[in-house]
Length: 217
Image (cartoon, rainbow, N blue to C red; front, side):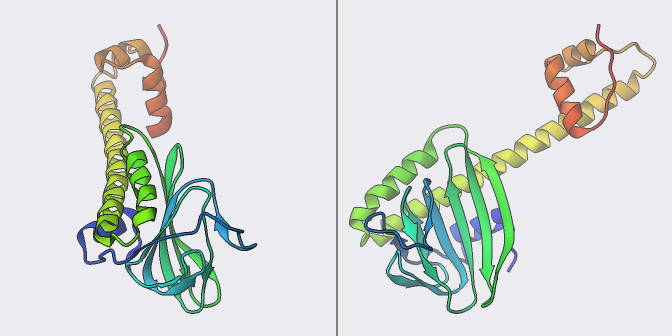
């Protein structure tokens, strides 16, 4: 299976990896010593294989999703090879990871982060999913909420790629501009003014994308 994060999100949203049962992890009672517990909500999605999770009180198979609320815990019991896709909803960023248990050891197959920005769509969807814990039998609604969350994650990843592409395009346009005017006495301020950006942003762009030496006025 191909483990690119955007690719996995698309397959979970549109198929063929359909979402199956949505489970809710425990957020009450004593936490076992080896349980996974963090301060942020997360999704644990089974891609391949299966495992028993004591936090959910169930055996999870491909397509099953475990929602762990902030401060909640889960405790997977790995008895056979399995691959999981995790999404961590931090305050400032989302974290994605694909982990495989081959029967003997863990292997990280993919890891990625993206900043949380823009409207608070993800926060409200997580709040809705928290409310669903009290009506966990409403599986169709739970699946739609999870699918919406995953779609939101894909949108954030897409905007990050788009932003990177815009920066690269601007960098190349400025570089061409400088190449065409190599005989001119260009300064950082004059180039920035030509592209309606600040001199500081111009410096930041070229520090990130490539070397450039321009004099100040």
